[in-house]
Length: 85
Figure (tube, rainbow, N blue to C red):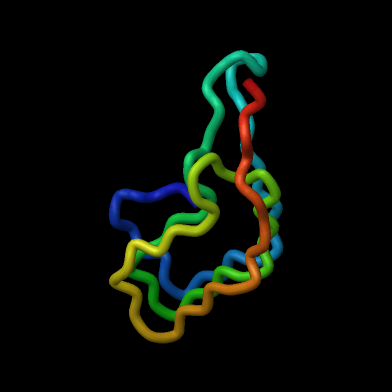
């Protein structure tokens, strides 16, 4: 999920997605993303059962805090992407 400019993400469900890292520019650009799912300040929202196989370079799921009641984040399995050098 991309970070937004303050718009509310409350009362939402992010369920059953498959995330993956990659490159832009005809497979010659920079690998991204650094982080898979980043969230903050949620209320009554669900992020669950998403597959993050090789989905990020640094961390798969990042909680930036300030969440309120009714937030469920679980069962989002995966592995970090490693660049063969």
